[in-house]
Image 1 (spheres, rainbow, N blue to C red):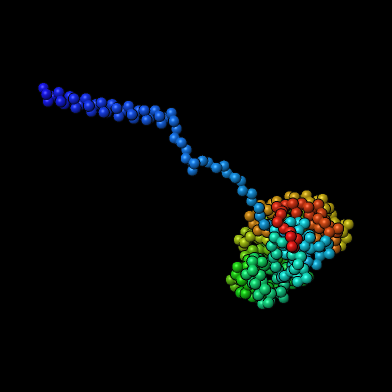
Image 2 (image 1 turned 90 degrees about the horizontal axis):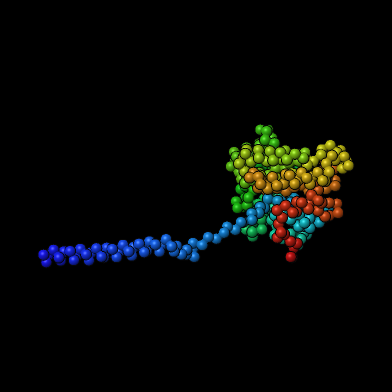
Length: 322
């Protein structure tokens, strides 16, 4: 009997311990359901802040010898992110007027500009962080422009490719229109570039067409698809080829050109194929293009120029010394 009584006592103690444990566990469960765990500071969610994206696509071609306005003031008024002057360098007499916070892009206008001296200067400017791109020949397919055979252009291009610092991005020559026929100047040139393993980082095109956006966007996309290189549209605008030199006979008005630009330019901003663009700023002597002017005869931006300046503007651009 004593042994049995002892076993019963032991079982009672164990049962009591087990019962107590269950009560503690149940209390813990009830507490966890009533009082949620405290969120640590590291788990606090931060709301997303939208990032405003800008591009450097918009540029300006502006000759330093323009008689319509003042070249550097015109550039500042149009607020581009980059500009070119059709020259390899800014003339020494104009160096004190160079706009600040806006990229200058040199150009080898024709084969004569592709000298070792000029390449050495460009390499030095690159090392100083002052340039990053160089444009190729200007309309070499036209006798009134760079006027270069494909063979001559390739010989000069090999010299440029071999001697220009490889860190400088090299933009192709720009023909008067981006024809992709197998006999076109640009197709023959790019075939030679491929055969000789020469450098072309971007394709440059010029387009002058009636005021239909697809007449601009389709050739740009075709060039991009043909060579797989993004496009610089370094000259473009709406041209009337039937004025006979008489501005009054141009069938387009400045208001029509503004409306057209408001349709086309946002497309260029969003196109994957377009790396950069520069609307051509015409002069009164160009009867077929004058309604496209960004700068008027008074030296101030036209309505189109105001729109161009307001589109993705470079607010940092400033006059020299400011």
